[in-house]
Image (cartoon, rainbow, N blue to C red; front, side, top):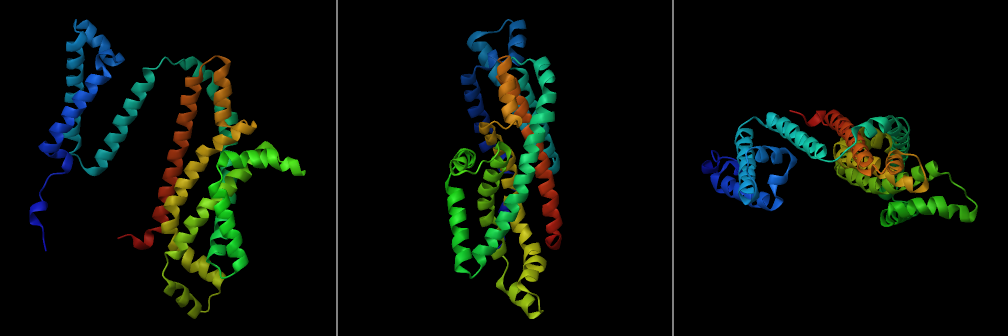
Length: 321
């Protein structure tokens, strides 16, 4: 059956029945947000001698006109250009928001090198080591969960249940403060790495297990018929196919781990968040340091996303048309 009537329908946001009410709702929301007092509009309205309810209404209407005109043009561009323009516009909007804050850029420039040379280096070191160890733990846990060995299966189930069930911050405290109670003293950085590895290894175990189980059983049987050992089958046949399923959620875990590495600051590790907090306290410039650290985290998250996309394309070559 062919639904010919649906082929030429415009996208949902370009339909007047959706577009016009959306602008009306935006106008009402802007009225409550008091746009006449926004830094970018306040000067223009003051120069025109407008204020009060009239100025607020005109400011809200002007913003609605700009948003509507922008949406009208944007929705008629090719998809690739739409994505690029949305990124540019939202980045400019975010920059405008930050500019409206009372920030000391001289303070940021003075402290930026400390954040990068010490905090960022320690953050990347902790994250990189934790990612490698978590990957190893996840692979071992997934293989154990898929085995017919009851001991291995029990250990893997206990491990994933424990480290997914206990908050990461609590795991850091237990390793750093609890183990010395039995004579095992762990320094701050190894304690943070151990907690991150064990926690994310438990989450990634289920990702790896699901990815491996997504491959049809016939692949295992065909590899066995060719004389491949179970280890060779896993490495050469199953994992290359399963990576297409494993990579996206694993990439999300890596990005989350990069940000959660900030939790090791509670045990005194001089990573990015710890330095941002302590340097901001020195001159009561907390927001400057928090925003700077946030931007650094975001930049490296984008780099991880780009790396994840390249890996996905590499393992998705067999399905490319």
